[in-house]
Length: 268
Image (tube, rainbow, N blue to C red):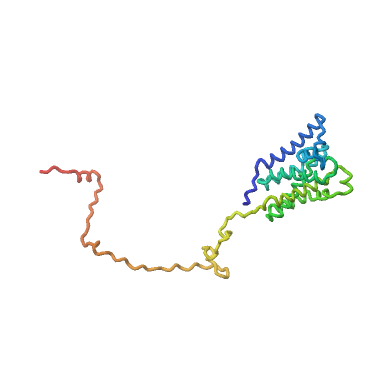
């Protein structure tokens, strides 16, 4: 894979914007028509709670909850579709399903809703995948993600604040584990630098380079050696093709004179 694989496409802006607007639309439906979608969230270890594996990322308890998830989703989804455009859809789908399933297994007996688990999937995948590739652009992206969202790691473990509140640390932990797992599911990306110069090629030989031949072993500029002059033996011409007779050519410049000369004259 080459450096120019990072291309800005409509999906970089379109998918994050559509996803977040869809979350706000779901919340608007809930407020406008008095729906209660909380019961469509993940209810661990119950058959009816399995529906939340799919629906829970799109359900939020209040506008503050939705707002806090919207900004990270916009940033992280845009980064995902720009730097991992070929894997983005799979990461998004598998991230929702796997993190939701793991939350259904380990979660407390309560409804778990919100896109927080998906945010942790994206943070985890982008961070660990960038370190695995060891490619400078993706490593820089990993460091940027840690600077922006590194404090989120404190919410993946149970503590008195999260245990007594409505924060689903189980969903956060599930998202973190899922993102890390997906880095191993998708093969390690290999990047190669675009070759612009001959000396960047692996088979480059400086001894065959005309420019490098102008320098001696100490790096001093020297004139190239003069080419050897090869004297060829004269070619003998067969006497059969030689003649002592002179050949006389008659040049006629006037076209009329040529026609007159070539015109046949009547015999006397």
